[in-house]
Amino acid sequence: MNICLYGSGSRKIDKIYTDEAYKLGCEIARKDHKLVFGGGDTGMMGACAHGVHDNDGQSLGIAPEWIKDFEPLCENCSEFIYVNTMDERKKKFVENSDAFIISPGGIGTLDEFFEIVTLKKLKQIDQDIIIFNIAGFYDKMLEMIDEMGEKGFLYKQEEIFKTANSIDEIFEHLNDA
Image (cartoon, rainbow, N blue to C red; front, side, top):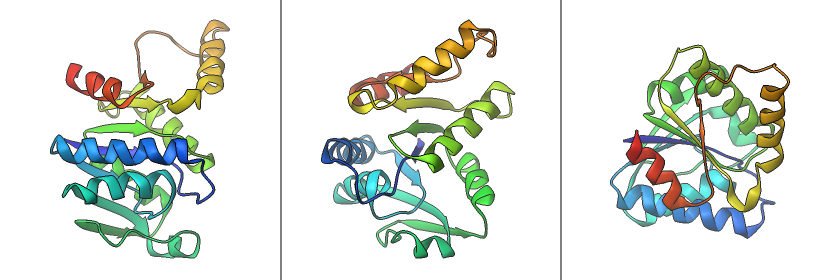
């Protein structure tokens, strides 16, 4: 299975998050899945990729070359696809992924998450989407989404994404798919 990880590339992240991302990468490799990610070598992306690579796993990085001006790119990827724009990058994520894991991140991660959830809601994709809620990182966002549903702004017809508080829960969700 090709598993896409969305998450921050920031170097300022608390170790509690990057340690979990590293462990997730280890599990992705141990279970013989392939990591698809934004190609960054730092933050959540980098930690997960290092876990994959340290366990002889496979990875596909996808990024525009100009992103190097903002963060270093991972040099250990099994494969790397260079694109021109962030929109092209997100399209390649969808084309190359069987499931999505949303790890802690910033504005870019939220952009990716809300776009992929919207595509699923509109039945343009059918991949599993799992929020990796490390240490309750996404609790407030999940509360906001619930409130939007309660106030009628969201349709609650089906579960579009799942939430996992641990790596084991992530793989339980993926095995249920």
